[in-house]
Amino acid sequence: MAPHDSEVVEEAMVTLQENKPISTIVIIIAMQTEALPLVNKFQLSEDPDSPFPKGVPWVRYYGMYKDLQINIIWPGKDAVLGVDSVGTISASLVTYASVLALKPDLIINAGTAGGFKAKGACIGDVFVASGVAFHDRRIPIPVFDQYGIGCRKTCPTPNLLKELNLKVGNLSTGDSLDMSPHDEASIVANDATVKDMEGAAIAYVAELLSVPTIFVKAVTDIVDGDKPTAEEFLQNLVAVTAALDQKVTQVVDFISGKCLSDL
Ligand code: ADE
Image (cartoon, rainbow, N blue to C red; front, top):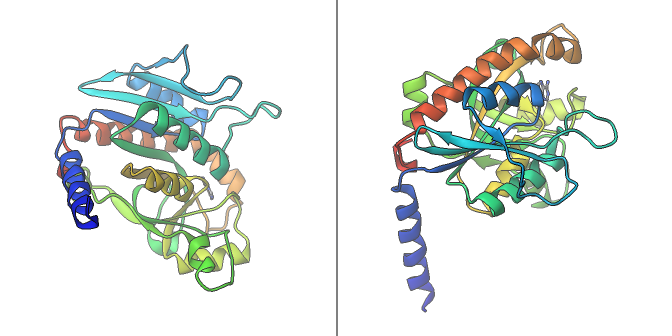
């Protein structure tokens, strides 16, 4: 087949994909506290025959909600330390394994985030990311610098944003809850409103595997405020999770019966 023909075929496949109703969703959530209220809301069950390799802590909850096959994927607890497996490594691995096993039409990464008051974020706000990038992968060599930052636009959802009155901002990802001066400079360069520990990694894998992804992030702590981040995060986690889960439910309700091109 001539290169031109293969491009035409690929374009036609993308159009087909965008115009067929969304049927399978993977929702990736890093923390159990964030995931369980949604598991209950959608009346999902834990998969006794997990599609993941034996011995990994990753958990799949699944079930039908309206016309959608919903999968909530939680990376589980660290086998040695017993805490949630947060961060980019676990997020990348579960995204890769989930896409291969479940072939979703859409990924939603839902979770909490730090917000910047200088960019208009308040505790309890829920943002949809318009773009994602890393802030802790500094490689000061031409082109490698851009590879490290890994700046990506997200799947456009103009109707969803309008209908649900969601806030929009860039998301910056790194593997630390706190923020070093180097991180801060990169976050400012990324023009980020919210900061998390998974988003840009999930975006990288989703792009590799051509799965559109939406990032829904609720603000538990104000990074450029006066309170110590860890304290503020833990204090607000449960209440803000309720706001997050309410928005994620609205997002899923909106998606039901629609195609990617309707979002
Ligand atoms: N999740 C919640 N708050 C966060 C923060 N300040 N940084 C990274 N991830 C977060």
